[in-house]
Image (cartoon, rainbow, N blue to C red; front, side, top):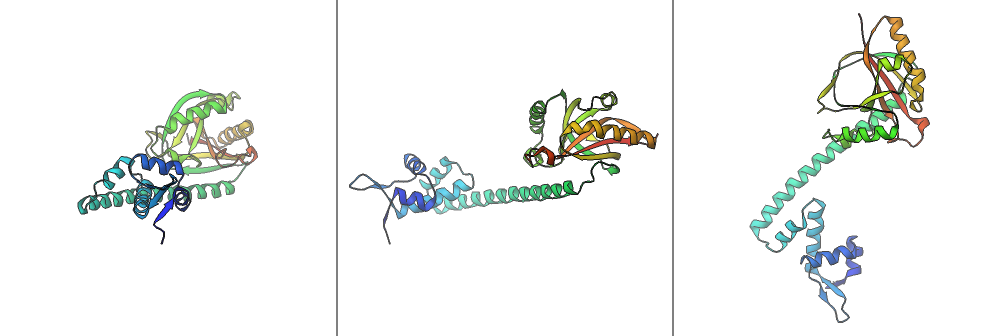
Length: 265
């Protein structure tokens, strides 16, 4: 078995850039021997150390913590490190379970979006929904993006909200009744840690495919339906994004749902 390996061989074997190997050497974590031609020659001890570095870095350990262990190895420090590794693994597993749940939810949302009834008013009953709301009017999609970024910063689960049907905008009913179908007064994110509440009860729902210019058709249909049924209408229309730029680059594939809370007088 070879006793020494060149830096290129180590780099290829571990898929680690030569710059990283030199950096580890600067930190004193690796101490390759120099050949007669000046080339670095890595010994089996360096390879063992590289295994430790790779595994611990993969678990998020700092370089300082790794150096501390490699320069002071004993049964006690190894036992301590193994317990730290186990805790890090448990955290990783929890994060992966959370990510798995989110991906499964987003797949289910996408499937439901494809089955969503389009171009028709439906009546649905919804539970109270916790959310974060940011009241700030906007006109352009770019302005919404900035507001949504500010809003997502309020939620601990923001990375898992993007790409679901939990984000949207608020359209005041008074504006819609005057023909301002894209006069937005704010944005919201449905999240378990939200401080605001979307009330439970009966909602009128209308979904459509395409960009939100379709509001000019959809909102009058919602309001007309509510009038025909004799419903009392809430103060805001919710514009929920089922499929948007996060799932498709084609606006014709976007799916938007409008919801308005109604009640019987």
